[in-house]
Length: 113
Image: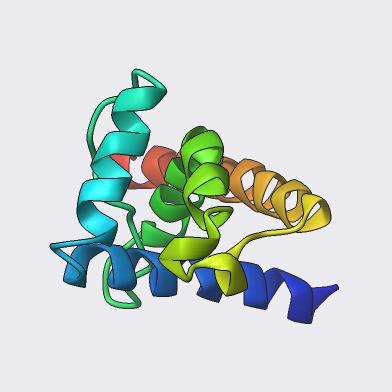
């Protein structure tokens, strides 16, 4: 289960990196996909080990944007099928988001003391 969770977490930065650095194919496809779903245009976040709570930010973004992420990784011609998440991986990511949210709220509370 832990290895599945880690694979799920590490799949997102790979998709993000590919989309950001493919300015002629994947980035326009990402923007078009977001427009198709009437969602704000944002780049996919990824975990940064030196940034506090970036794991939560990434998990939160991926869970909120799961529909366009599923859509873009389902398009064979874009070559992102290897990064598509399975249903149980989406469930794990939602659980991680919930856990990190509680952790983040606790840390915010401690910092206000």
